[in-house]
Structure formats: C-alpha cells, structure tokens
Length: 67
Image (spheres, rainbow, N blue to C red):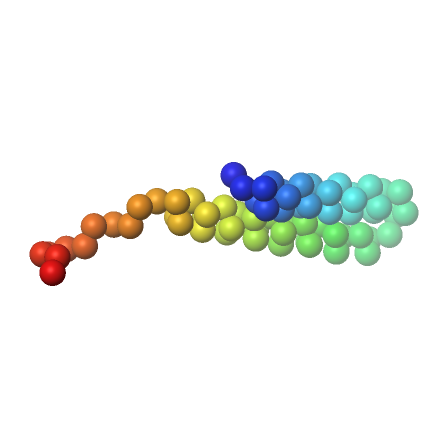
C-alpha cells in the first residue's frame, strides 16, 4: 500500500468521523454531507488500490508467436 493510498484512507476516516461528531454536536443534518464525501473518498481509495495492484502485476503473455 503506497503512502498516497494510506493518506486517502486517513482522509476518509477523518471526514467520516468529523461528520459524525459535527452532526451529534450540533444536531444539524447538514453534516450528512461529510458522510457522503467520506464514502466517495473511500470509493476513490478502493479504485486507486485496485489500479495500483493491477499495475504491479506482470502483463499477461500474448497468444501466438513473437516476431
């Protein structure tokens, strides 16, 4: 896991926890936006992690003779 991916997961946790704390502390549902942004950040981290793992794999062998 790269440093950028770790930072993305840390940001996800921070945004979600901040949204929950803000919602509980203020009682205003506007902090639900933070929860949505946290979920979107998590989705981006998942996609990035999959792309990172796919880039680390060797390419599949080609069919047929090689020129």
